[in-house]
Image (cartoon, rainbow, N blue to C red; front, side, top):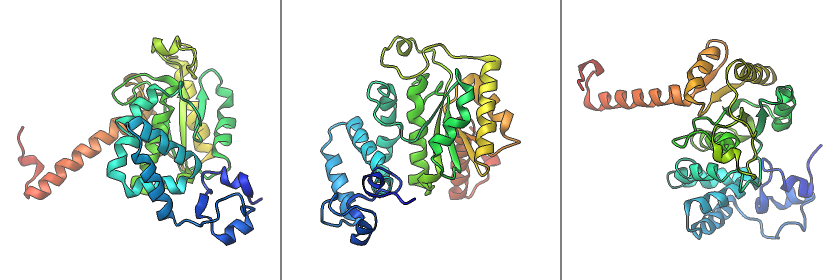
Length: 288
């Protein structure tokens, strides 16, 4: 059934805001609940960018852009792509680190994240189905948030890194945002300040290790692969003890990738090969 009126405006994947045409407004019950002028997306983007420029800090700019993201994916990615060099450090690294640290204190919107708890593995399938909202998921970024960027273990606060990484996938590679799903694998946290924080939104216990952890990750992977058979699964910011073992466990069976284990090596090799092409030399001729 087609979404109408405010229900349509509250769907970030379909909402176009003031860019809905007159015909679309009449067809979807939007007449009179939007200002009468019909914007082009260029006009919408100019308004967003001008308002963002009034923000004085990186984190304020990011919060403003996330509000746009939560309401209108089409507009958010248009602005992001138009200013990708300027906005990449705001949407992702380094400003996202501050956003992660403040995640529980300033939580507003789950941004379609699937929060999976090691304490309730029986809820994995229901959670993934609910978060997907009937969408055909092709890409998942999943994190257990033990090794976030350069800031370490941030528990459920690390959900932001999965959301942010998927934003980069869409802005830089053109991945359809309706086909992606961020997944937070909450296995606890060893950061004492979070465990003692009354506002912390994650599991209030230290990290679960060993067989229970392995079984939880396996249940997630097997369920995700069954629900989304065309899935590409990206493991993000797992801690040192688990990153490589988890990758090795599944890399010969499923389409999986670990940015920290493989992405760094890929980019380093690409840089070296590019330099050799420029210098018209062979890698075997180089000495350090």
